[in-house]
Image 1 (spheres, helix red, strand yellow):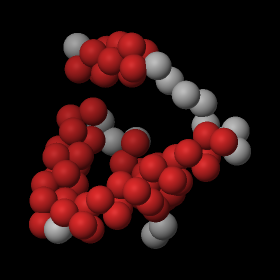
Image 2 (cartoon, rainbow, N blue to C red):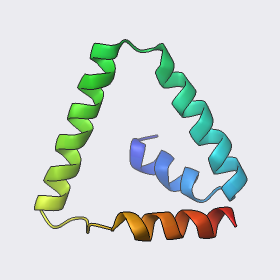
Image 3 (tube, rainbow, N blue to C red):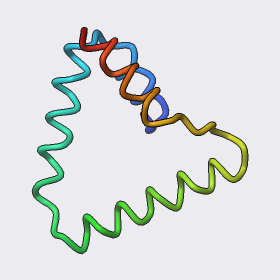
Image 4 (cartoon, helix red, strand yellow):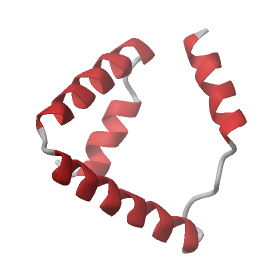
Length: 74
């Protein structure tokens, strides 16, 4: 199973299950060193910028993200 398949399945979960999964994934990152953490974020940032520059994704304002998050939680 690849990352796209895992993401698709995870996004199809109910909100509560997704929240539990996110918490577990975040906790799993606590075991990595600071240099590893910084390297991972540098790679992720570069990937996101490349996707944006290629026109594969659209920017969403912070206000819109907060609005959607509140709707999911409310």
